[in-house]
Length: 183
Image (cartoon, rainbow, N blue to C red; front, side, top):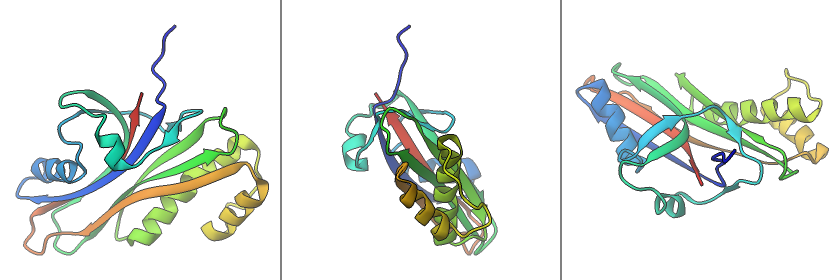
């Protein structure tokens, strides 16, 4: 069976504002440079052997109208000054034959730093559980991150996060964060 297994992944993000919610979402996708693709959301597995590439390099591989697989988080509001965030966390194992995790998270009222730490922690926690890395779920993200580094089983964690405040005049504001999976 010939299966599509992504070999490259890049992260992108965007924000948009408009009178209509859908239009603000479209604007956020445009800001992230992925609006011209037919996006298909998939679950959160970082494929074995896949490697992270820059967004500028990854965007060169996309074609208008192409079916494009992604792990994406989005959030919208029309409440003036309401803080919103969307993020995708990434956790890659040191064993390149093992799969990793991507996590989606969106939040209201959470700072960009708090939301990005949460998404990264979520991906790393999911990976740690399948790798048998013990950790105390009640510890802070920084403390858990230190435990994972010591274990040597999780080689890299990162995230892409977009936050924004709702438009002061009540326009819809949307944020997106995405991991784009490429062959």
